Length: 527
Image (cartoon, rainbow, N blue to C red; front, side):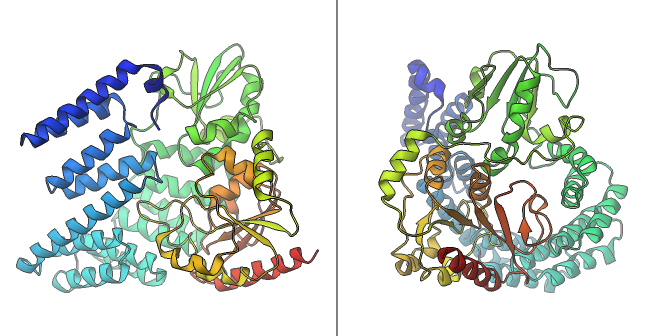
C-alpha cells in the first residue's frame, strides 16, 4: 500500500517511477551501481514504496551481496509482513549466502568466524541442530571463542535447553568475570527460566560494570513490571530509545517530548505508535485520558489500525492519522508506550475497563451474514504470529498440537492471516475450520469478525489484545517464560478482565496446556 501522499500527489509517484525506470535501464546496460543508486534515491523519497524496496533486494542478490539483500527484504517485511515475494526473496538470499559460506569452509575448515557465520545463516533457516553442530566445531578449534559461545547460548535457547545455555555464558565469565554482555545474556536466560530475582541481579551487575547499557536496563524494566513495580519499571522502560534496536527510531526529534509535564491545557500533542500492533492496542486505552487534558490530540498509528481505533478517539479534539509526513506543527509528542510513565501522577492502577474498542457496526453485520446462523459455540483460533524474520518458535504452536480441539462440538473459525508453511499439510485435518485469510484486510475487519464470535483462543498475543480490548472472552496459550504484561501464573490478566491465561507448566511442552484448554472448551460447549 502506498503512502497517502502518493495518492494525493501524482507527480511524486511519477518521480518514483522515473527512478525505477532509470534503475532498470542502468542494470540492462551493465551499470549495477547506478541501478542501485537510482533505487536508493526512490527509497529515500518514500521508504514504504514496495517496488523500490523489492528492486533493491533483487539488485543486491544479483550482485551476490547476500547480507544486504536479506536486510533489504527485512525492510520490506517490516512494513508489509504478508508480502510473499519478499519472504521468498529473503529465503533465497539466506540459502545462497549459506552456500557461499560452505564453499569458503571447504578451504578454511577450521575458521571459527566462518563457522559462526554458517551458524547464523542456519538459524535464519531454523536449522537449529545444524547451527549447534557448526558452533561445536568452532569451539573444537577455538574453545574460548566468545562469539561462538554467545551464539551457542542463543541456539540452545531455541532448542529449549536453557540450563546448557547458562553454562555457555558461565564459560565466557570464567575467562572474563567483568564481561557485562555475558552477564546480561546470562540474566536473559534466567528470566526465561522464570528466575526473576536472579535475572535482576545479573542486570544490576551488568549495569554496575557498564552503566550505559540500555539493553540491560530494558530487561531490568521487564522484570520490575512483571513484579508489579510500575514506578521503577516504566522509568527504566525509557531506556529502549538508547538500545541498538530502537536507537535513532524515535520519531519527531524537532517536537518537544512530553512525559507528564508541563500541563497540556490549551496545548496540542501527538501520540504515536512505536512498536507492534498488540502494543498499540494495549496502550491505546490511555488516549482518552490525554484527550481530557489537551486542547488538540493527534494520534498516528499504522494504517491497519486506523479504522479500528476510530471507535476510541471519537472526541472532537482528537484526530487520527496514519501518515506522519503530513502533520501540522504540534506542541509536544509522546509515544504510546510512554503514557503509563507520563500519567503515573494521575493513575493509581492500570485502566482495565473493557470494552474500550468497538467493532464497526456495518462490518459486524457483513461478517454476521458471511458466517450465517449460529447453532453452536463459535470459537476463533490463532496459533501463530507473523511469519517473517526469525519466527517466534516458543510462541507459535504447531497446529498438529492443537488437534484435541478438532472434534469438540464447536464452530471453529481461523483468525490466522498467514498459515505457517509447516502447518499447510496439517490443514487437511481441519477442514471443518472456516478460513478467511484474504478477508481480514485490517484490524477493523478482524475486530468485526471477533465480535461475531463467542470466544477467542490464541497463542498470538495481537489477537488476545484485540479480543480483550473488545471485551470478548479470550484464552491465551502462553509459553512457560514470564512475559511482563501477562503476570506469573495461569489465571486472569490485570490488563484485560475477559482474558484468561493458560501457561505452560513445563518449558516447551504444549500438551498440558492443550489438554486443559480442550477440557474447558468441552465444558463451555456443553452449556
